Image 1: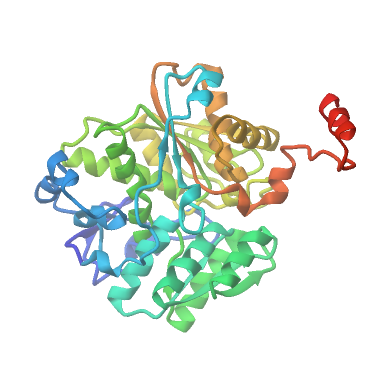
Image 2 (image 1 turned 90 degrees about the horizontal axis):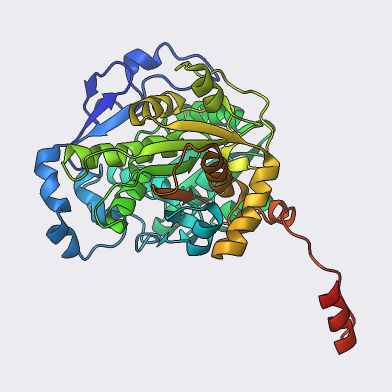
Length: 419
């Protein structure tokens, strides 16, 4: 395992990985049920020693194209421990027509719809599976609204590790089908994601399973930070002005901040980009905390939004996300489901990228922030597109109108075109 320490984001204490598995023991002892996690752990590496691996010449001569490209600042010993599914960086698309529509000179889409299980969550699941392999675990469990679960089931299947998935029974059918096809042991829960999260922790303790739960397992952040490193390399070793992040648990925000923080520690960028966190207005605990300037996030225990992947009433990494907002002078914004549905269509029509509701939320939020004047037309912006629309086709159907069938005649074609 690459040498690193685990630093508590709350008390600042350092722990050895062999001594602590999930959370800072002293801070997590004050944890309340159904509240954001206390004692989240951040990986810390020897940045002066690792910087040389990420200089331009070193990266350009590095033949590794998957997550193993970033091995010197990943908590595993060998890239061979990673499942073989992620073979390269995901595209950083220039989105020319969307730029014109929004009046932006330098908008990019980080398109993780092309990940092996079609979501950003493959990054975290792949790394956690690699850690599990190196530590000798043969069962990994998680709670998820769907994407983290499908990613874990797929990544685990690729290397022959068993997965156990706790998911709300109302998760989109396509995601539940993916889990089953990948051979994950699916346990649908009559309740919310937040209740499934608590149950999964209890079950892991009882059965001795390794827990992949987002934020709770510190290595989920390490997987997600790889997107920041890919963005930096894709922008010719520069940091953008803004990164737009659809936000549920807050752990993607933590990962993006972590990645750019480490690049800054290695003196490879001169700043961490400003973060814009986007939530649905039916589930916006981080936005409410940001607007009230209160680091202590109040749970939203009855979330309701079409964007299931960000329908998280208790953002486990919420404290880290709030700290990242403050440190990057970022913003948090909520959008209506109607705006999200419209953004699915806009993104598809103007870029050819088919996004699920949570992923399209980043474009809905970007559109609002541009209209408010928060984001300027000459700034460099990267919007994260975190999951494929094929994950939730019924939601996408609300963004379009499917024409009625016609008779197989040319006249019928002409009438259809007129209509």
